[in-house]
Length: 577
Ligand code: ATP
Ligand code: MG
Figure 1 (cartoon, rainbow, N blue to C red):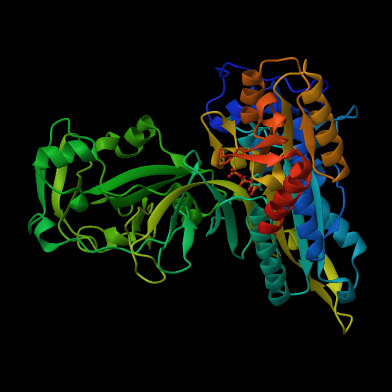
Figure 2 (spheres, rainbow, N blue to C red):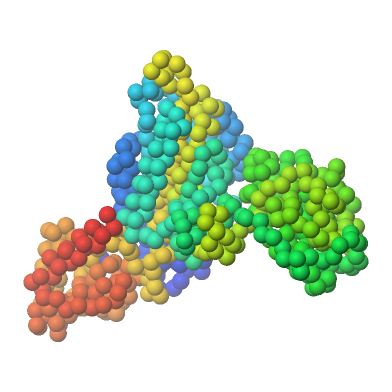
């Protein structure tokens, strides 16, 4: 492709609306253009990158026996009502009506559609296991569409669904996909980690893992053990209760103390000179029409995902408003505590609270706290569970070593669903004895467009993108430093023809621009290799081979140039396979 013909509008300025590097660079380097919030057009180079990622995904799905299908984007509401997700999905779902007033949605995911298909078409155990997938646009009216392709409202996803005869066999499908995902992200040239995760709205009974591309800008926090295999999203990571040292405990007898205007944990720490580890953080949550008192230690954060899972995932849990707390307990939120509330409200305490002796908590009376409060003596929780967020340095739940922390971008997730959807939609098969049995399912997603963004977050410098070779839009760019010199042009033409004949994906910067402009653009766009043709080197039969990642320049002979570039690229591609 000649650059003069390529629709590749580059920008010098950093677009004001773009907060993260991948978004800035994709706009500046002419990969995408915004149509409206969270919805983008892919320009030719952007679409080439997407197609490369898709192809890697496709090959790895096929290698595991996946069969590609194409399911509709527009889906009837009835199926979603059968699984109960028409309500659960809430405002994230794009909904529409046809001319007869029938309800539809734009598919945010496809469990309903595919389970309904399999229910109609699969009769016998002989047809299982079955792995079906598609690569297609998904629609989610995200609360905060942002960061370009990272969190779009229309985005490209590969989704595969597995159908098995029992739990045992469905575990094998899960493992197959887990392995395929590792291969996909390795082949894309990315540094990633698979972590234990929370199942969220997709639900299901089995396990789930997220695949995280490690990058500072990642929205997700993960912890991992340097000694064993354990790694988990902080939302999910199991916390071990740690004991408080004796000297941090505050006394022996339950006493009320006057704490005027002292409401937060920090203020309380200062005012009483007590350690945060002996304070009890008490928060009121509301789920459906019920209130819950959640207790964690003063130095800990409440993990709302764990709280939600403990109380039942579909109760629309949220923090109670201050006036709701006032109405309920006749006390403002800053002075709430568990003592005396046992029959008034459902109390759920973190594992560490259950061990707490001589702690400090709100007195349920404005401007007062209680000291020397002990769980089991001064109050009794209705339920005790792991409710808090883990932090780096805590012990690994598997081996006890100190956990480390990293940030990641979730590019894929695998779920073992069990029978959640097959039960709701009544998807059965007949076993050897002709008996009807329920199908076991799994679902497995890869954010193709988000993977493109994640690759840039992980691979860039101040001048632009540094594509991993397997997903670069083109592998090599030819830059003659002048298009007015017939000799330079003749060499550039020749190398271009040779590289094309060898199957090397090449662009040719034939524009009448200063070399500095061409180099800047090539660096910004991120072509892995650049062949520069200049007067001086050419006089000695040489051209420059520039490596975008290392920035090293090597003088190579014109005669071998094409073959050499071909060999390097082949080696790079083989490396990740
Ligand atoms: P998130 O927690 O980031 O909202 P999710 O867990 O809801 O994502 P899944 O339902 O697991 O997403 O979808 C599978 C994959 O699709 C995700 O791992 C992610 O890579 C991608 N994805 C999800 N939502 C978006 C989005 N709004 N824009 C781009 N990619 C997305
Ligand atoms: Mg997910």
